[in-house]
Image 1 (spheres, rainbow, N blue to C red):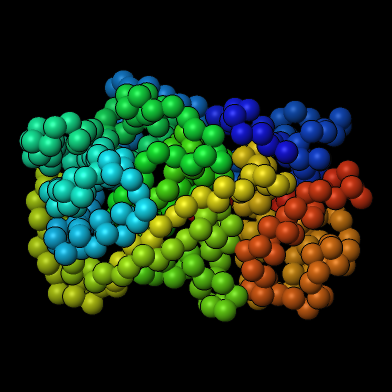
Image 2 (cartoon, one colour):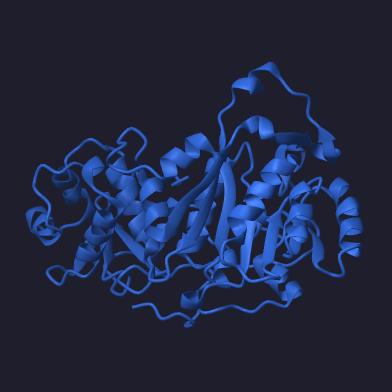
Length: 394
């Protein structure tokens, strides 16, 4: 069992070994096949974006921040800002610390400050920073403005980084914040709008960071309050009752977090700015854009108290990816490609019938399936991996 506070490696130690077109994890990476050459050993991180060691400031690597010119949505409606403040207020104490991602013109920032909150504004567009700092000068130190892009914290790219790219270690050391035990939560709330063009990839990055206890989750069980497109929100909250939307992202998100849809706002309530803080002209097609949902992602306190840990989470990711490749197939047909353990025996253990399909399984069922295979004592080799599974989960 993983013990909080034991330390999380910057790169996972789980190993997989190949033979005859298969990967096999032996006791979650504890044992090795002696006859397998070392060069054939491959980590399961080959199947998704890798966790790189933290890097410091320095000269920017070429192409590291290619999205400088990407457009971003901002809260510019006072009504929406007040709605967000009301949703966040809840039972929080006066002086709650809010980490606001890309505040832009500062409409939401002002509303948060007026509610008595202390705000750390992470802004990735230099053109908004002077006005934000001016606002900070007028509120007696309750607003800290930092040139940083929250959604690009801890990049997986090689090389050094430069603002607005930053590592979470640098950010939290600058703020004087220390890591908190997972069960005790985290003394701040994160608020923002997911990037327009990289929304789905950003969600995947958040989930990888959460399950691996890296980036902001290295410091504790941070609560995220984010505006996401209604399309992605419906996928994230889908279940067997909505099979057309149900996918591995749904299972991972609901297994890791309590997900609440706090409110829904039309896209017309937000303004889109281009680089240099210029308001983008409204286009005819934008009038038919989907709504944005304000969702709250609160990591479960007991996420890592069972078999699932930050050291074997990538096996769970792969299991789901493998299953949802043929979502309407029977689970019993998938199991032989996942594990050498008898499929009928596994179904009995998780109390499922032989005709149960992948899309009939709820998130808790998939977690039980993972725990059953991971804790099995019947076989030395518990997991099998097809050689073609080399593309990223995102």
